[in-house]
Length: 549
Ligand code: ATP
Image 1 (cartoon, rainbow, N blue to C red):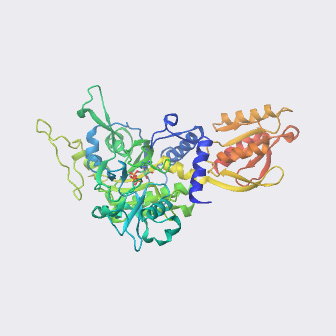
Image 2 (tube, rainbow, N blue to C red; image 1 turned 180 degrees about the vertical axis):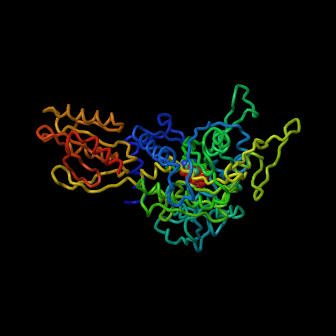
Image 3 (tube, protein in one colour; image 1 turned 120 degrees about the horizontal axis):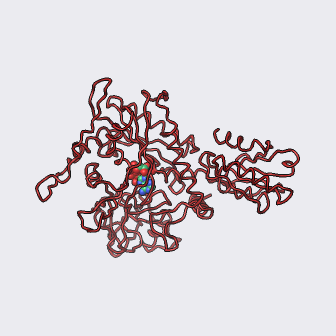
């Protein structure tokens, strides 16, 4: 199956079965925004619940976790989306949270400098366009850029399709970011026919602005948070003062974040509104390197435990020059999404060693001296406009009598990207026998049972002999146990199984003639297709046991 078809099938299943819809679809949609349908909301909630359970609810502060330097506390938080604008100045987002973009002067479209794809090409004996350029960088804004680049290059050099083999390619497809602005005269932008239409790359701040209150002036401007993390840092002292936590400990938060992405794309992968699952882990500076290792490894295991396969998942340590302005070490957990080229991976989660940057900045109002010191703007009265909170955000260890600013390890995961990775991983087509034993292609979502949106489906084989009543009883018992289950009595049983396979329901329970005579039901497994008989009065217990396993 081709890469394109693969992703198309996944996107189409998501819409057909109610996982994901384009936001505001009946009005033509809104780029970069998505709605989760009845199944999608269950799936994403299960992903977030699995994270929260692992991090907070089931965390045991007395337990020794393998690889962790010592026992530790974990607590949760839910901070507001709009916060004091000064927070974004001290966090560095106001000055530094931007992407480089280029504008096309002809098409009036805007692109991310580092994301637009293109390829260098020449055509011996020919020059491109009226400008007589010999070597050209041809770009494409298409999701699958390669065929588009080839067609556009042929057209640019005035070749017919069958002459395309006269083109000489110089290197593979690469980002426009590898092309110096001084070479832009040789670049063909998407959707235009002339060369050299790009402007110089410019900074574009990704924070979404809003206005508070009725006056509506620039002084009332605030920002929707671009990450949940800052809400945690500014509550560090509140949490220490109001709970029994001691360093080392973590504060977890799940919630919406907003970024004005220049080119939202690849389904939900790059959206303008998305959800994050973030942990800020506060530890002693002397132990932070060990904690960084610990959280990297533990977070990687979380994804594999929920079914992401080893070969499509990787942990990548950043090079020194890739590190954020505050970071002493960062690694990404990445997944080979089907919409990417072979060998390419997309980030699911970043695990960053942030040192004491955040707590220190919120206290003193300084950015990391290694990069850019805070420019202190003055207000009308000559007072510094952007200062730190002035609050002491250090920590006093009453055992060692030491005062220090904790270091922070931050595993920051995207709930939507994680959910999309689980969807892509789960999608499969195989051959399974129908009722007559004939092999038929079936679409099956192989979700890990713990995140599957529907845990089980209950069917009466036929609509008589009391079967529907028994099936409804089983359905209700499962519901009362808190499981999301479905009941269906319509259509051939094979068809009902296929419908459940397509949404990833791990177990189907069928009430049939033997249920009445022997008090047993058929339990069918989505993956092995095995059908076993289990006692009618043990159905809920058995499903719960399997979901735990
Ligand atoms: P990218 O380089 O892909 O833009 P990032 O490095 O800026 O991502 P972080 O700031 O580390 O991302 O955010 C943490 C996580 O939040 C990411 O790993 C990702 O899962 C999620 N995330 C960030 N931006 C988006 C977005 N625009 N849409 C969906 N999820 C996002």
